[in-house]
Amino acid sequence: MTPAFQWIASGVERPTLDYQRLEQWIAQVALRHNRTAMALNYIFCDDEEILRVNRQFLDHDYYTDIITFDDCIGRMLRGDMFISLDTVRSNAEGLGVSYDSELRRVIVHGILHLCGINDKGPGEREIMEAAENDALALLEEMSQSGC
Image (cartoon, rainbow, N blue to C red):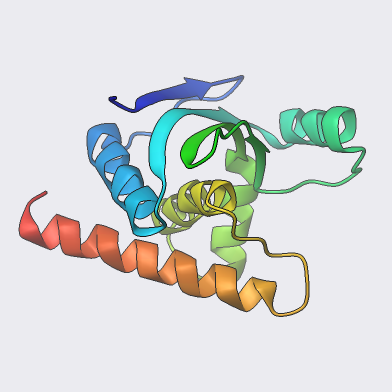
């Protein structure tokens, strides 16, 4: 089965990214976690939209960079990921990293959640950060090898 990706812009301009390369990368990250990427929808939005989604579906009243809705079936990754480009931009500025770098981190963060990695409990944030760093290193390796 071939993974199905959708990259949707809701009220914002869709980022200029190499989506084909990102899809290959995400599929490889999934495989490294013994999962298969199947139906993945990325919805790029602004802070107001992510706040609305956060309130409506999670009963949270705050901004965030990503909200991941898990619709996985066994080891097949399926889900919707809302990404606030506003928050990605402000986080990048606060961390002193490029917007593109922070956006790639957030994109893979959602996949890692679908792979079963959490980041809210004791010690989980460090596990998530290590998994993000491993995934970002893989993307760099793929870029250097021409994949």
